[in-house]
Length: 479
Image (cartoon, rainbow, N blue to C red; front, side, top):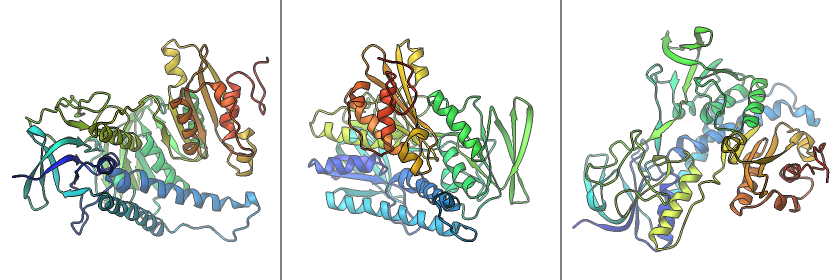
């Protein structure tokens, strides 16, 4: 007779491991399946986010940002003396240490909460059975009252640029470059492309970003995209729009020719490294047996309702393998919601208030709808903007690029969207998310006392600006 669990979670990424811990905390006998192992055969927990995504990329971004600040410390009167240099191998080693600490910590959390780790490839069978195939090919079948599918996503590869070890890289390979390339090509001007491009541009690499779309950051508010494009150009990123890559050629095993077409016709560039960052797709191949009862759409996403239920009773799916943005925090909150539902609690997730962030410098962050989306929907709005150039704290930090933009309903005053470009936009956006979660009006933020001097005051002033009452910029309206 096979072993039975109250909950089996397939995948130990930011959705899966959080779901497993939450389920165990709620008193459910829980197991988590993970196929990823290191070169010693030990389980690697944390998924793409902790191992080759969110965390390692932020470590590199922070290291190169500190390098950039050291190079320009004279603005504060600090004389470094001599040339500031970067030990890239040490930077990568620091990144790896951070990853190791965090992924090892998940194993400790599993033990502390009583989560059983099942090592191997998980596959959902009929009747909520989960088959786990170990590295040696041994398969074991487990029974579950409930199953949570959290298989994540994988990079999209394109035929014109097949991955080539050390030269044409995906997001994982891009994180292990251990010397500064003279020329770097990036296919795709999305989150990964811009962040990785920023890392190496700060270290002196000539970075060319090839984006097939004719518009830059189409998902962002136009004001954010416009401001960001100017700032990235100033930083040395050569972002070419409408550039469709048609082929690549390895030259002498040490550089890559990239062929593309744009409005001017056929073009080519030669780079030392090429990063393919054109997006991700759900990792559902081999996840389901034909009689599992779970249905996929034509792109491989799992069909779920608003509470992440699949078509099979007792089976849920969360994270990158289902509809919605491919964001770690979205996956984690879905995991918590599903664990709560399984435990018999009432739970719901607000998909209208999920923040998005690009960790360049300045950072780009937004939550809610863009101005163009609201206008297209025929919603009457009022908009307030406040530049960090008018913030005393931002001036003191020598970090005055960007702005905060708040969009409110003209009739109800309810905040519908907040968009930012700024040094710590990733931290400030949480204030907007909290306000929107509580259905706040612009007036609610106007009446909130913000500490002075803080960068957060820009949020306060932007809220005031919605009605033309900002104090530290010229106002459009008067009482």
